[in-house]
Image 1 (cartoon, rainbow, N blue to C red):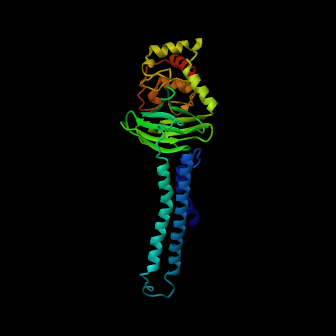
Image 2: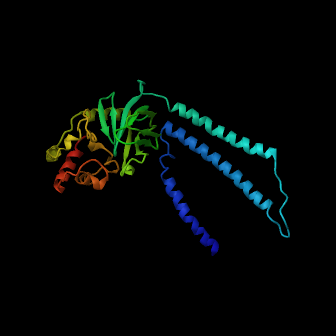
Image 3: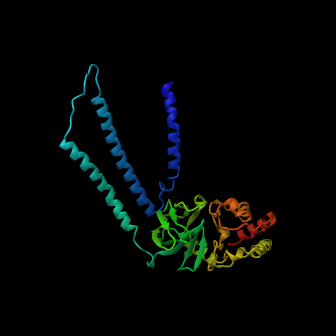
Length: 329
């Protein structure tokens, strides 16, 4: 009965480890060369850790059993000390393990520190982090987007990363490591995606009240689909008669003062060109009319700390604006 009760004590610990490992799903599922090399380092570190733990705990239990106090024994057992062989052994082995871990770590550090911002065969993107959204500028293509970083699958992408306000950290767990986004500084990194797909990105630096909601998506397309996306983005959106009322409300309420609706314009808020094709609303909610209505009607309720003001839209006005935004394709 006592042993069974002791077993229950480990349940909170098991639940905690399960929760922590659940956050490693992206890191443990690499979908690009950068993430794959980092995954290999994680595996190497884990194997070394397991080897060290097995040896240490084996010696620990061997000593406990071999030199335990025996029945009828009085006084201290024989004291043994001063073994040069053992001293050398547990000095040299950790040194070798550190070398095994350090060599690939240093090599990868130099490989992924390479600057591809001037490389003609690389796609260049300038990333600016804001509280609490991401801005992506493609200087070679003359376009800007927000929240969705669209790239061609298999092509190397070079990033210049900075921040417009506080320190953030750019992170795509399945594709690449983290890179700080600091105001006034530009950090560089590069990555690529092996296959077409949608990959979740996050801010990895505590940056304010909605830090945990500061997500974005990396959308990897085939070369043909990527070219078609660029062409579509540069083509003015065709707004239906049903959505015209929403467009008028959008302009009357001065939404247009912060949000550009063509990819070549700059605004203080996220660029809304191609909004109808995006993956999420407010960076983390499903891209549905229902959530768009909630978002434009009361931004602070959906994402606390956001700078988008509450414009006092009625339910009908929010519905009309959502209908208009969904046609920005």
